[in-house]
Amino acid sequence: MTRLVVVGDTLLDRDMEGSVERFCPDAPVPVVDEPSVRSRPGGAGLAAVLAARDGADVVLVTALADDDAGDELRDLLAAAGVAVVDLGLTGRTPEKVRVRADGRSLLRLDYGGGLSSVGALTALPEGDAVLVADYGRGMTATASVREALGLSARVPVVWDPHPRGAEPVPGTRLATPNRSEAALFAGSAGDGLDQVTAQARALLERWQAANVAVTLGARGALLAQGDGPPLVVPPAATADGDACGAGDRFASAAALLLARGALPSEAVAGAVAAASAFVAAGGASGVRVETDGGGAEIDLRDPPSDPFALAERVRAAGGTVVATGGCFDLLHAGHVSVLETARRLGDCLIVCLNSDDSVRRLKGRDRPLQPVADRAAVLLALGCVDAVAVFDEDTPEAVLSRLRPHVFAKGADYSLATLPEAPLLSSWGGQAVVLPYLDGRSTTRLVEEARRARS
Image 1 (cartoon, one colour):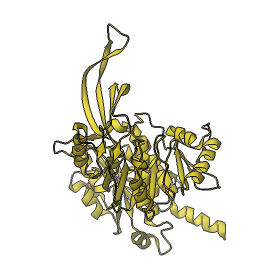
Image 2 (cartoon, helix red, strand yellow):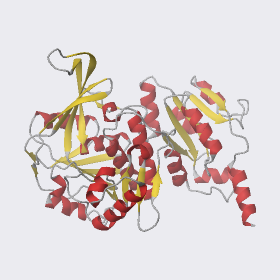
Image 3 (cartoon, helix red, strand yellow):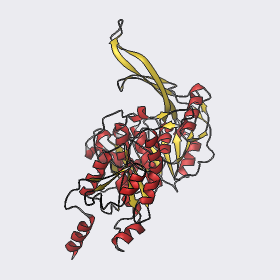
Image 4 (cartoon, one colour):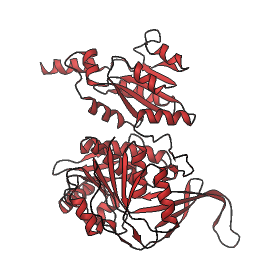
């Protein structure tokens, strides 16, 4: 299992959600009736919960105070499966309270807003990557914390900065400021792509970082890696929802992808897709952590990357699990059409992906053209794909038996009579279906055309 170490300031976030049907008689302000209160970890704590939901083994290095809010955070983090290294916080645990109605924030109350001192960090826990979620509370400026982070250069370090926080340590693999933060840090205004590119390049030099990805909200993200043209990654679809926590979702997804061997460009593409899905699913307000023994309740539209855990959660919540399968060696428009249609049949889509050995047996020794890690990364970057399950056999029956989807969908180059998985699906009450397929699209044809063009 991938281990991610998250370092940063943890806050207690509360949402007071009610309905508004009238205004106060003594002031032109809405009256929020019968608000319910829901608490969750915020700041670095939210980033840790999101990474744990993605199937990672997460250790959170943070500082919690000895007060009621700190105790509640400890319980919430434990319920979400996050291990905590507590440095101790001198001062009050920061709290942010949002008063909301009909999915929109009306008012925010902040408590414990000043900088607080934290204890010393003797060593950073071992992990496959480190994510620094800086919320400007002073932790990342602590000498012992910065020294420990500077010694962790052997693994990817992702740094999500804050205007009041410390600068990333030299050698950071990926820094992820948002658009306004990049302008502030670089000391230049403007949000055009040319201006954002100049800001990102200035930060590459100033921070001595390997990569800087500026998040652009609904426009996706811009990745600068040097003097070459930047990589701009737009979202697959514009997400309309609560953007609170989207930066934590982006950073946690990018850090996990880098930990699992992805290139920075692949990590940014996957992070854009994850952040877009997160906002569409309700943002931070859609993340629920219960401490009554039920564990963390996760919105199904932004599921964990473990395909089997995802299938179990969707089934337990009464949702519909949809699966499809294939080699997906060169992803083309026909694949995308089938995948998008399949996703609309249920609450999650899991792709059963042939391993490299499986593809070679089916397609010949010159295939696949892309290794399984690359094929999986491309699929996961699509907003319609929720998880990928790799299998080594010639057909996906074994992995389907573990997933037990309600629906198994294939393109119309098959018929139900020739679809070998159909009897298996019916054995547990599932349904095999055939979906429309775009004519003239196939990986084999693309490969043949490329060979003819070279000859």
